Amino acid sequence: MELFRGYNYNEGTSGGGFTQVSSSARQETLSKTAFDRSEIVFDLSSFDLKRTEKQLFQGNRIMRNMSEIDYDLDSITRDIRYQRFSVYNSQSQLFNYHLKRDSIPIPAPLVEAKKAKDSIYRARSIAGGNTYGDGGYYPISTVSSFVKKLPDSVSAYHRTRADSLFALPLKSVDITTALNHARAVKSQLLTYNTNTAMAEAGYREFNVQWHKILANSFACLCMFLIGAPLGAIIKKGGLGVPVLISILFFILFYVMGIMGDKWAKNDMVPVIAGVWGGNVVLFALGMVFLRMAWIDARLFDIGFYVEQWQKFKNWINDIMVPEF
Image 1 (cartoon, rainbow, N blue to C red):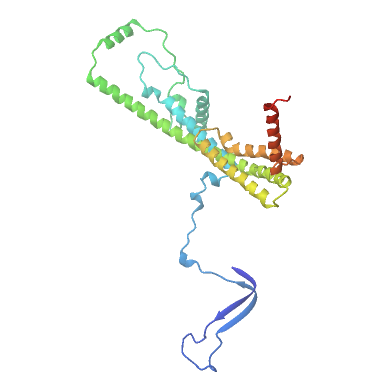
Image 2: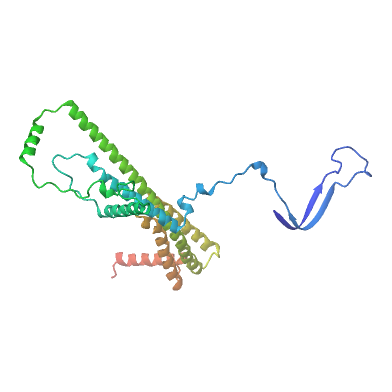
């Protein structure tokens, strides 16, 4: 700590004890020293302060800039697509069809994700000097085909075997096997849905933070559009009344911002509407106040509203009381 142009006071006996001495031998107990600059160093070693590592917080969305958040959003989008693709890829193990194959095609975004991942595997394999099936990376397309069509016809042999299977009586072993398989399928799908929901929630949080970086900057302009016209519209009360009204509008903006962020993260409203809603409202009010200041309106004059109320009462009386 640095101090400038002051005095330093020290008091106490130089002997360091309370031994009574005569007044003639008593030393000076107070000293006053003037200084132009004094530097005081505090010893904080006893607090044993330890700085937290930066790596523990650098992944937090609040600590990242827009370009880093864009990278995170792209990564989460890729993870969601791969998670959904794994559901389609594992359907042959989860569901068994009798004498037919599934004909549901994979959506186009997942097809593009599959092509991108195959290209990555292919590039890694070529860079490593390996080929498919020789210690390299295998593309996803080799696991199962994408579109499976239904058979055109069923032979008489298969029709006879199918009828005989349906004619057999049910056994407890068959029912138990079917129930266990259904429970396994349900558990697997719930796991897929949970992972996808968590990834989508993370995507919304990063997307909200990306928009908040721009929205908070734009909020300064909105508050200026409200505060400047208020200073011109309000004729009485000095500086305190415009500042008080501006604080009320800031509280309104703060509450709307918190509610919008919460609704956007919970997927109750779109992210753009939740984050930018408060700015849109304040910007509209700012333009209204700017118009009122331009025409020198008596917006916050109580006498103006009293006159308007009296005119309204007179108009009602004219309507209710007929003229003779």
